[in-house]
Amino acid sequence: MEITDIRVRKVDTDGKLKAYVTVTFDNEFVVHNVKVIEGKNGAFIAMPSRKTKSGEYKDVAHPINSEFRGMLQDKILEEYQKAPNEFSESDDE
View (cartoon, one colour):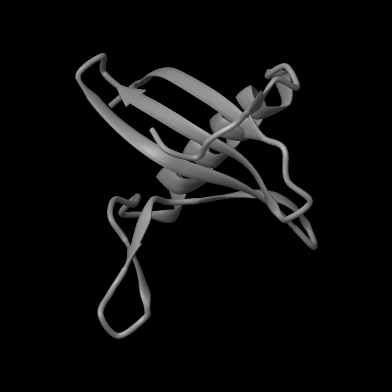
């Protein structure tokens, strides 16, 4: 599986959320709303999730193994660093 497109939408907030990302795989499958979060030890990605009835957040889509997650995070953060500081007004896609 190859990542064929990464689109970064930076957000202008004072919080830890820095961007929403859309990732396309093999020009055939897309995942929206991957988040770039600024943590204590640097930036990391959070996969798209939804809130359950019990109040927990569950990932909607996620990597199966840590090797793929690391590669995905590296590529997303690389594109995040290159993206211009043009901020998105909305977090809706």
